[in-house]
Image 1: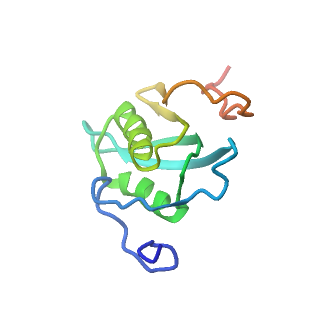
Image 2 (image 1 turned 90 degrees about the vertical axis):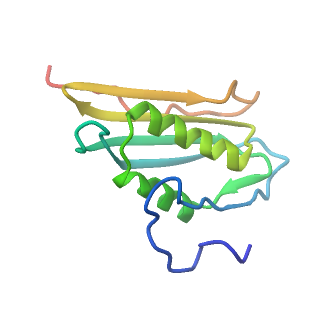
Length: 148
């Protein structure tokens, strides 16, 4: 585990493709439990206008052999700040990248995007059914509601 970014000064990745995600062994492989990462200030760029898009991301997963190292996840998510892609692409790509790295028993991602052009866009993706017996709380993000 000496190659991890943890505890080292590292530069911000220029793009999601250049970002390195680190993983660490799961010390509780015999137990099904949910790990949740919340990124309430996720930012990417609209590929059409170049203007920033903002989202509240919630990532839940049930680990098998691996956990994602949180510093590397923060850097990976931050690498989208200069990346132009649609909401659906960002949300699903993050989920797929984590699944490829971790091979979890289950993963879901909710992308709650703030309105663009007056329309909020929420994107949800998961790998299958939640493992039996796992307590899975609601993601806790209220649907967008304007005035009224």
